[in-house]
Image 1 (cartoon, rainbow, N blue to C red):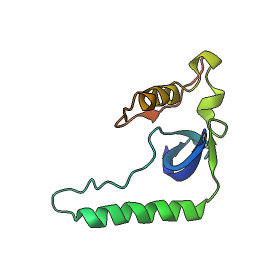
Image 2: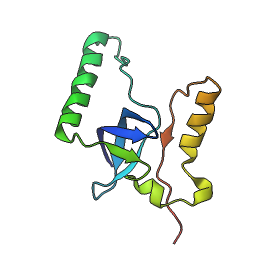
Image 3: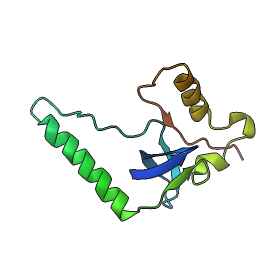
Image 4: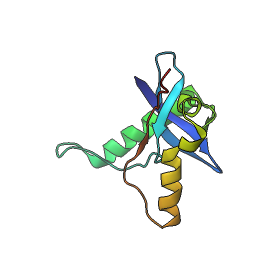
Length: 115
């Protein structure tokens, strides 16, 4: 599975997310929480350079493909669930945000239908 940073429109906001692709380069899933510039540098690494490296990678990816993806329209996950399962991850995010909470790490995963 490959991934890159992309601009994704979710409801009324546009943000940078990690987007994951299937074998045919079709967006399959994405991180629920937009990318944040926080250093995850090891002890021997410079946290400043770690943030700059991430920012450069984001800019490179957005310049390579500047189109804005729309969630759920442009993702395979959206064509593979029933209306009762409608984007469970986004419903959880909305609920947490309404309660003033911010989830730390949640990924919208691909949901395959049984054929």
